[in-house]
Image (tube, rainbow, N blue to C red):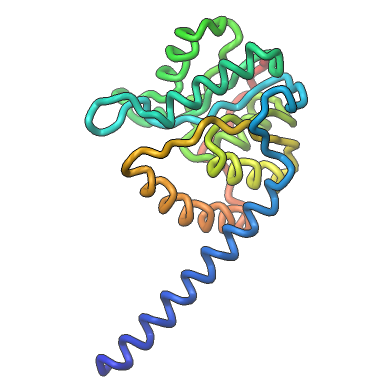
Amino acid sequence: MTMKTFLRILLILLCALSLLIVVCDRRVRDSARGRLYDDVQALPHQHAALLLGTSSKLRNGTPNPFFEHRMDAAAGLFRAGKVDCILVSGDNRHASYNEPMAMRAALLERNIPDSLIFLDYAGFRTLDSVVRACEVFGQNSYIVVSQRFHNERAVYIAVRHGIDAVGYNAADVRAPGAWRVRAREWLARVSACWDVLTGRAPHFLGEKIEM
C-alpha cells in the first residue's frame, strides 16, 4: 500500500467518523428538545429525581466542580418542592471508589433528609442508571439531574426506553480542561445510539426496590 493510498483511506475513515458523530449528536439533541429545564420553577413535579454520578474529586484531589454543581442542583430541586426523594446512581465497582456514598454525604451536608435519599450502586454507565431507575426502583417518570450535555444523553436513552424523563440542568463548568469532558461526550453519544440500536441492557437489574 502506497502512502498516498493510506492517506486516502485515513481521510475517508475520518470523514465517516465525523459524520457518525454529527448524526448521533443531532439524534440525541432532537430527543431531548423540550425536555430540559434551567428554571426550577418551570419544572413539573415528579416523585423522584435521578442524580447522575461523577467523581467528587479531580485527579489533583481538589473538589470536582461538575460534582458540586450537580449536588447543588439536586438539593435546590428538593427544596423547591419539585421532587419527594432523590435517587443517587453511580459507579461502585471498587471498594475505594463509591460515587453513591459520596453523593449521599454531599446531599446530607445540604440538609436533605437521609430517609429520602436512595442509593443505586450499579449505575456503572448512564444507560444503567436510567433504565435501573425504572426497572429496579419503579420510576416510570422522573427528573434527571446533571449538566445539560449529560442530561441530553440521559433523556435520549430514557425516551428510547419508553420512560417519561425530563432533565434539570446543573450549572456548567468553564474551567480549564473541561473541553475533555465535551470531547468524551461526542463519543459517548455514538455509544448511546449504538446501545439503543442493539438493545443493550444494564449490567445488573435485580430485585425491585420501593421508593
